[in-house]
Image 1 (spheres, rainbow, N blue to C red):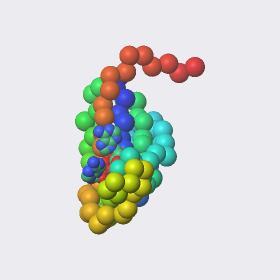
Image 2: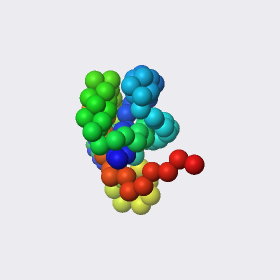
Image 3: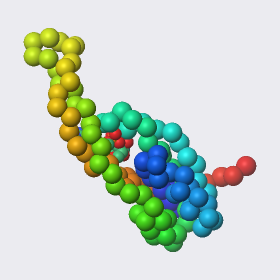
Image 4: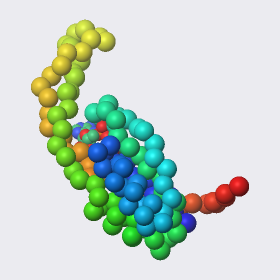
Length: 110
Ligand code: 2BA
């Protein structure tokens, strides 16, 4: 068994959960925050049998879109420890999805 951890954009999360549930997969949705943009994203946990991983990956890939966002980058002010000034914003491409696939040692349902 594998645990698929998918970090996706909030805009894609509900559709992705619906599609996974529709195919018979269980899913847990966590509200998370990206370390770089410091804005909300969604992390989905899905436990699946090994042979179903390709199907889950296909669903994620088809459902999650990449989007461009502006990221305010802050740089330290020269000579003033602890003070920050906003620098020029940079454009970053977020997603479609960041996916980790982990081996599951044990699965219990009580
Ligand atoms: P954030 O950390 O908010 O990053 C959002 C987007 O900003 C990233 O999209 C990437 O395009 C850009 N970015 C991130 N760090 C950067 C940096 N140091 N310099 C320039 N641009 C940077 P994605 O790569 O698609 O990542 C989307 C979200 O997935 C991330 O949100 C984070 O929550 C998660 N993530 C990405 N890589 C991860 C990793 N190795 N481990 C854990 N979470 C990760």
